[in-house]
Length: 472
Length: 113
Image 1 (cartoon, rainbow over the protein chains, first blue to last red):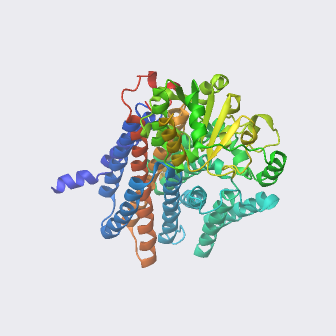
Image 2: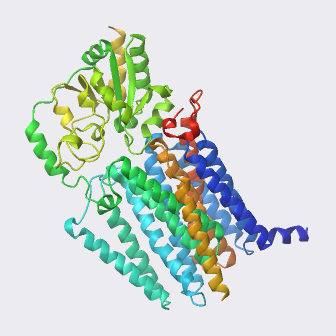
Image 3: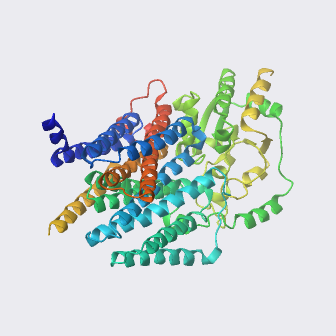
């Protein structure tokens, strides 16, 4: 028994377990990048994590098991129900929150390292440097993610909040203060007040960077903060001399950076432009002008008229957006589709890469409602088809259909690829009100003479159309 | 000397891991961006290990203990919640009958079978 337990605690054995763990992370991540292997990939990574945790528990010094059990129990009690119960529509903010607590764990670990080593006395300078880096980046990520959560959850207004032109200067000053505090500590100061000052500056920086960013860019921001948390975890790993942390953290840092780039390019936005913020900031002004120009030309319709229009179409394209997600209308939409198909109408769905508030949002929801996969068309395939489409039914999508992205160079979303709904013969838009979308700008599409607006909650409006169809 | 070599070894591991991260996520369909973000998010919950290590070595004083318990709780939320949420999301992609077997998850696998 003694032999066994000493074998289990031998450093080489533990290192091997760590190597197994990160090999599983890499394999899991590879799986995650393809649709058919993704579920298994995620589970492989989870197994890797379990091995890493067990290895660490075998390795650690004695004592304080009570604290570990308490911490893990608290975390499980919060994390499991949250992950189980969150609606698919609220997924982006959930990911933001989980990312935030990861960043929180990083800066708290740095803080306790600082306290337990009495201000890094007796440790190598590089340990202090990496630990301080982790503290700054972890704190930025924690606060930034919380703001992102608040914006997506609509606790905080989605519109950019900023100091205007002073924003960049404020950010820079906060960054310099945090770095100065870090340099001071690394150079030998043991003052905890300075460390707390570093945490506060980083916290303010996290807030100041994310608050000015418009809601539409939030998924990219979350991905960027995800990469940050990964990097800070890798830095913690170097400070603690723990290979599992270094490898896992760095892989997330690197893949998160790539992913952020991919997401930004899908929206035709550059990362620096997003971080510089203020996207849609001028929206209120421009929007007001736009509204004045077009005032009074919005045509509204009824469910009965919409049903007739749809019933006599030969080709219908459904364009879902966040409004469908909020109203949980995917099943109602599926019913409507079935009804139309029975009448010989050809129905397909046009999916914008960032429809909803995260990439792939609509695919997840429509898959949940059992919409056949071959009816879902990606933007590049869908756009040429609009010209021979009789009716485009836009359900709670807004910015991704706004022709201003193509026609109006002054628009904040100019250049963003859109679904060219306005090419179809007629358009029905289901929307709760004339309020602008997440980017905070007016949509010219609604003032187009061939567009009819059906105001109402997506789910009830779609159900009404379906029941009207029954009576035709 | 010993410290320096530990540092260089760790830096080498860091750089190599970075390249692996870049290579692994070379081309992902748009549809999978969110689950992938969520999955990598769960992996960095590995900071939990840092909390476990420090709490085992020495945690004296109430305040230190509080910080560490919160750190461990945060790390646990990140790991457990992250993997569960990703799993739920991916299940929806999978739930469809017969995915038309596509070549190595490229473009047209763009998501839900």
